[in-house]
Image (tube, rainbow over all chains, first blue to last red):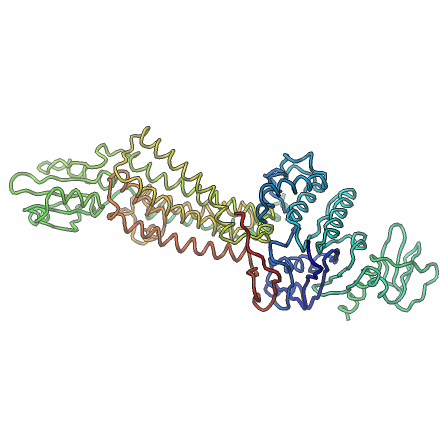
Length: 277
Length: 360
């Protein structure tokens, strides 16, 4: 079992040549919890995860992570060997982390059961659907029961049912004591995490529990059927939402209860305004 | 159609490697076929031994470039000179009668030119061809061809195998696993070395049994040169993989390293027939030394000591190329130097450091 430790980074900077991918990012994830890292393309999610996993050298700051044998990682790519079977992928990964044959067999059996891959045991990973492949990648990353599990957008391009199953597996890992860090572009998923870190242009924009992030949003978010004049607005389903910094609802709109998606969009708009200024 | 051509031109301009290959390849071919593609050997290294060595050496045709005159030596020493590749022709003189002319049949084109020259001149003795009496092309091509096969397996298969990991995103996965760079590389290369060994055994067997290629030397020396050569070719493969993003790029680069080796190593065109400016390129290529040793061992039965120089050259090339390849591969795989214990450069503390993987 893992002890109740926290992993993460302090004032982390990552640079690729002259490109500043991350600056001054501080982030923590406690054992037994899930932390979501959200942000648009180029926000720095992958750089943060790579720095946490140790495949990118930080330019500044410190990283706290368990030893490499206590780390599980699912990269943004397929992360599985397409020309090996499900079974062979799991065996390779387990053996790489030093599991003996009997232990490996026991864990593979349990993982195949939990991921619903038992029927696909002898299929080549390259022939699996996107959702199944991600479940295999996750199973490979947790076979050695890591203390810190890092996943880079594991649900991108995956159907809703498989997404729900993947999150169920992540929750199970956290319940088992692992600290789980997930990068995602889906904010409804991020709401399920214990803490959320919102990145924008390599900097930390918001951080806290989903409720704290929502509560910290200044002004008012309103909703109406037409696009409100003079306010920054965005589509939400068939309706329009807009951010009113002063807290006044324009005619034809009504205030809404904020969710994480609204909070992140507002934060992003404020950041855009700041950069424009 | 114009839009299509413009799009293609823009893509071509950005694909620097293909562009380089399209521009460089004709230049390389021009140089090779202009300066190197010649079977005509003008000067043949010759030793003259026996009591009348001085006198005979002075009277030899110009083509025979006398590199050593040794009146105190006899036929046995002359044969040894040929076996050690110190010369391609040995003239053995005696107090009475015509001198004997021994020719190294493993040095096919020198041998042919000498045989033609001497047979065309009445009064000169008929040459005796050693090691490859029938002057068979297969006897010298098969040993060299083994090198080409090793280049194929070593360079192309290795580069493709490593790049496949990068292209499919699994190299990043390997980077996070508790492997050391040398375990990843070693484990990755071992199967290719195995395949290369089987390939080699098959070619030797086919060469000897089907093409009647002699195998006069020590199998151990042959195994040693094959191993050294594989190190270089595999190192080149890994090096190529570290600068290639896709398998297509890897193949392009592999071809660019293979072509000069095949054309300038002495495999097809004799090194002595090349212009000096091109010949030195040949002396930088690993296949050159493999061909020398393989022919020496198989055809001439040359002893280990006589092959020290090419073996040492292969060892040096192997150390340089493989060292570079490992350094680059390690940088790709573990940029943060995920060591245990204190401080990554400027940053990063690793906590809790259990021992490294046992399963490799």
